[in-house]
Length: 191
Image 1: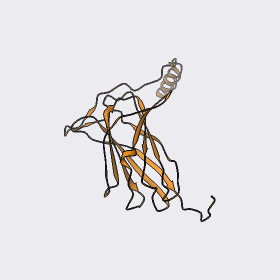
Image 2 (image 1 turned 30 degrees about the vertical axis):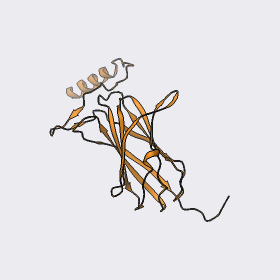
Image 3 (image 1 turned 120 degrees about the horizontal axis):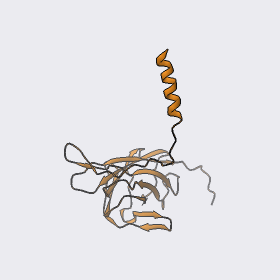
Image 4 (image 1 turned 90 degrees about the vertical axis):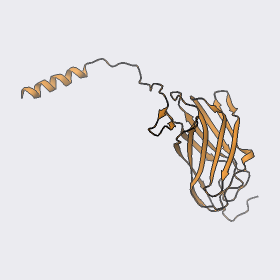
């Protein structure tokens, strides 16, 4: 019974402690170095939004927008992004590389980012975008990707996004899936 009274008194005393209004914020951290020597993000970017300007199968003149938040607590810059069609089927899906754009989102609007080498692998359905120079942490980044056309088959398509920090020996970080849905035409010509 004595232990019970002690616990009640202790908990009552703890509840009377003043609460501070200072929010907890993550502190900047150095890049992560793995045992094999590769470098990774301490605070990785993450995919926060994605959409397509048109969502009918086989539509042309479409843009896919993917937005990433890159925390200011990170120490290493973002050097490269890979976008892979991980789920959904279209064997001939590909992008117009020369139409790919990237922007930093600011309160005043979008500021274009210079791009380095762009490439795509038709077998793995992977688009690789190098940022030249790499982007510093603390920014919101939007990619504008232009496929030749939307996939030919209706359904949900998952585009996996991976971020690579700057450096020679780096380990990518998965940022999330861009989930885009494409629909069949309804058969009516509304034009």
